[in-house]
Length: 103
Image 1 (cartoon, rainbow, N blue to C red):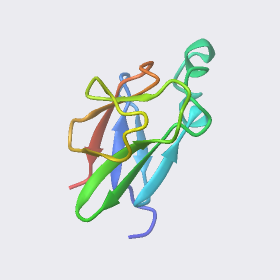
Image 2: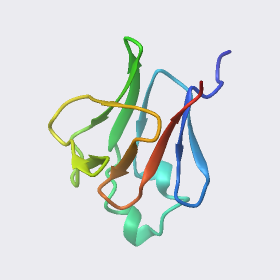
Image 3: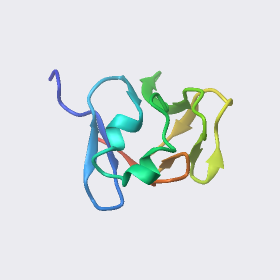
């Protein structure tokens, strides 16, 4: 059904950010409520996107200033990288988001 989350990003405090479309961008404003401002400043305004294509979820850094880590590996400049349940996405390395697709 329209608007139902397809997946979630789980924050360290247990709160979740819903992914409600097959392609969704994330940036500083998405994390402002969860991160102290001195930490959130390292996240770019348009930082990364998560999208679903061909039966697979992917994450892609959107040319952010400080890059994006997936399971501890820098993906900036590498294009779309496949992710799976439990993959840890870390914009600028300042917060660990656990990817949880809705089954």
